[in-house]
Image 1 (tube, one colour):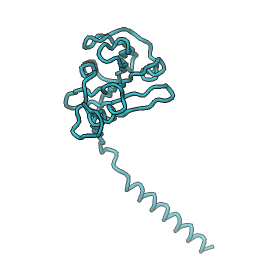
Image 2 (image 1 turned 30 degrees about the vertical axis):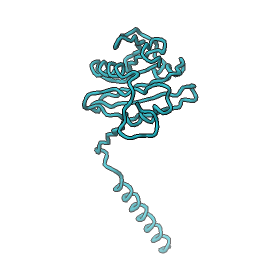
Image 3 (image 1 turned 90 degrees about the vertical axis):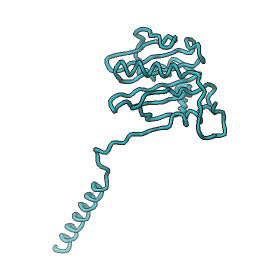
Amino acid sequence: MRQPMIGVVITVALTLLGVFAVMGLRPERDVAFTPDVNVEEAAGWTSDVAEYAPIVPDLPEGWTANYARWENRAELGVTAWEVGYSVEEQSFLSFAQTDEPNPAWINELTRQIRPTGEETVGGLTFEVRENDEYRYYVLEAEANTVDGTAIVLGGEAPDEQFENFAEAVTESIDVEVETEDDNGGSTG
């Protein structure tokens, strides 16, 4: 009876030691990770496959890109250039751009919020979709007199940040991307 009890005690001790070791190796929760994606570089690569100039907005200090990607949304029949930004760790704004929009893609990006009005930014008329939590501006391809792409921008942010973002995105439509590295393709 004594031998099995010693085995149980040793097993429990080793298990607890392993649990404490794993807990000690975890990173601290208060360590803030701030991604800083190079949107211009990603746009340079995207310009090789997109048939339009990917938008690279010129945003003020404090805006950090979380992602910049060429996204194949096969289930929606769309490929799109998507970029998302954090602002002062409190707001999140993003946009998506495509030359092959459809209602399913727009509804997916806008959480199926119905249109609530219109807003003109940079001479372009956006359809506004908003509720208590989210606000989206949708520029239909037919309304985009600059390059004919559809653009959906939105997120959660104070009015001033949202307006600055909408203006920066609008000003960057059909602006060729300049990159530091030659990626072997057409980057402008």
